[in-house]
Length: 152
Image (cartoon, rainbow, N blue to C red; front, side):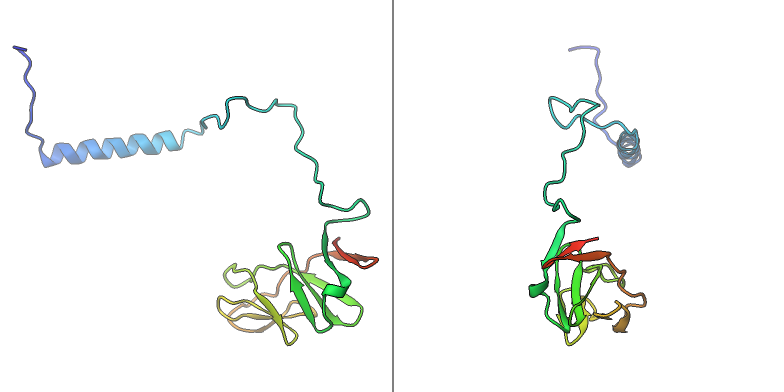
């Protein structure tokens, strides 16, 4: 192959320049907004999302049975911390600590406790009872139907 010359002397400046251009190309491609198809057959544009099947017909999703929530204590589900501060009174709060977003871990001695930094919240109103958290746990609306506590 006569007549073709290849420069095998790669300078540091050329290597850095090439790497920079490659990085810019990747960033532009990532920000282009185009997404690769995730399956061979995309869903039709007019298809509806699947219907929820876990919610009882009479109300929202069941969180707990009333018998499972001790007086002065509570139970923790994915959706809420359900408490019974006094007999027959049920409350529910977000299970996510307002300090740094950890999931609360236990209900003990009238307090909802976060394991990450020991923030503690009242089972009656979600107010901060101790720890670094400054904001109360947000209340989650519930209703009691029969012996079930449902998302309200």
